[in-house]
Length: 416
Image 1 (cartoon, rainbow, N blue to C red):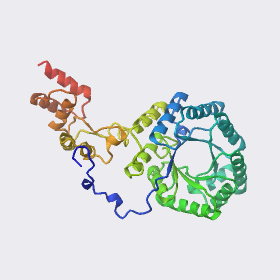
Image 2: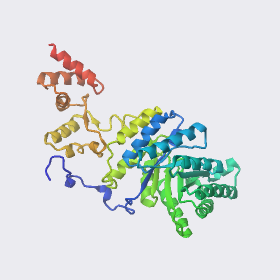
Image 3: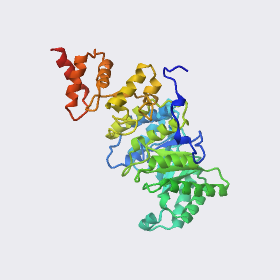
């Protein structure tokens, strides 16, 4: 292939694949978006309007998310109305996305989900959760038999209505094996089609993920039932993304995430970064992720969230450099007509794959090539005098110049 925009596989030696442990992640894994439920439990976000929720649903479908948890319809009439409206939006527009609703293992919560399903004319996955760790049992003054009884009653209601039921044990990663074994067996016996392992307080390490999934697989295998495993992780130790990827390798077939990782305390696994990494691992070869930025910015605007400037993929500086030697390399690649090389020479994530582009600024560590590039991008002739004038100014500053600051220098040079 020619140099113009073609992949140069011989230019990247992939140490990530050398002696790679574990089995490859299967291609039939699914993604469960919690932005409109668990994400909204962050104490620092505003609840999106129904219009924003509908827009987010469309974007989730565009980026290839398989299932969206769209709320807790049993929590209030407004929540019920919003969930019903979102379900109707999906059916009316034939969006390629399924929905789930969350609720306690309380019959009244499950019946509200059944009503939603019947009124919207579509299946709704029942995502029922209950506390399971010793800490929670102590605080609630519950015992295992009571938890098992409530779980069985709630699952029965959903299963008998013909809805798929995912059973989630809160704080699974700090729960005792004997308790989990009891609860999982009850859930399977009463018709749950999924078991959701919840790292509710972000406690797990990759070893914990491996151990817990292996433990759960053994229980499922022993039951003889066809039950799948979900992983739901929080980010308190900064491991949510890593744990989600390991969960898929260790045998979970579905992982949960939220846009920008929003959620309670420090949040959840970031859905866009899960998608980014799966794409770079070659698992989403034909999936168009150029709407991923819009998905993130729409979510941020909807909940009043500020994206950090250095946030991967979405942050202002994700593909931006003002360093002279780095900028020069990008510019040389572009001058050769090699977009593939320009997008990778100083970036481990190809910006173009996700609808962004490499950006070159002018700062105190810049060289003439930065200034020349900035000017040419705006169809301004980069005369030596103009380039020298801008460089002289920037070398005396302590920051990367804004576009407005450079334009002022250009205008001043023109009137001389």
